[in-house]
Length: 477
Image 1 (cartoon, rainbow, N blue to C red):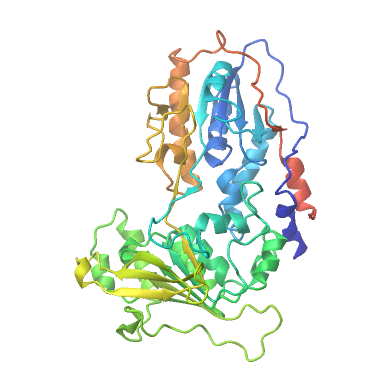
Image 2: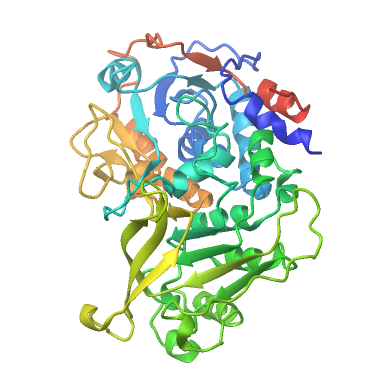
């Protein structure tokens, strides 16, 4: 139902989650108190693994947002509910009484890391990587140049004041052409959302304000641009296949020409998977002359119906472009403070073309989305490698800071899927248990038994089943 999609927006500014939880049986043995900073998949996996192996461990999970689950909740596309199923496991963990979720608390600001170390046996930092990387090229400050992260947060209802779930970051009603720089899975999600009809999202958890805004969507061309060649495509075969199938009657996917056999000869860590991906991509190559590579005639979208019904999406073409290095964002000829095109330098990494032989390509656009990755932000009191954008560590132990650990993207950088967070958490948890067994970590002496409080309006959630249940019942904002 359409109005079922309103549930996420209703709770975008709500943070009061209190439900009775199952209490563990009383015991005279002292509990080992461990704090986890961040309640995304990595933080939740750490808490789950810690409490699963030992019954005497209790975990407090601190989160700066008013709701948990981080990347699961705000980074996964609305039409991928199966990826979010892991949230149910985390909800069961919160119900167990051995993991307490504390929201609206920013560690390093509301509570210093040093204070956590005074109250807990160990502290695990799992704050992820949510800051958007920039291209640092001229024109990036123009209106209509936005990051993929900002667009994803919009349609996933990132709550205020950290996001603006009621305001699209660009003028969707007037946009007709879009350029997405980068071709990873996030870029493919953005392309799919912009190419789809609003009706496609009515059965998802996309909020109703975003769906109403997508009723205005008339984007007819989306250029997904990569700096390197086809063999270096960053998207997965599942993401590309979904893009080619989900609206096959109105969305046409085309790919720049390339030599498949030459691409298959490039060494790969997984040649079988790479072969399957390239063979699928080659089926959508546009072969109407060489003009397409130099910015000449472009493929057309599927023909539109003669009589478009109200709110009809209309046809759209998604063009996968390669060997284009962004040089600058150009202003619109009539709106000088707004983007009107992106200028690229044509290169060929595989063939070894140099810059002087490359040509310049201009792609007109009404919105330009940069999808070139994320980076972590340092926390006061925690060591941080600003050059690499990660916390320096050895097997999850923060370098030079005893009893401090890290997990997830802040540990290894923003790479991999949610399932890989589990494998990474296992390494960090193994280090914690090793230190516990070797008496490196204190268990009672010198550790305060009280939970530190912050000056902010912190929220406690023994379980988030109350909010989830209310969402499923279709509460409206």
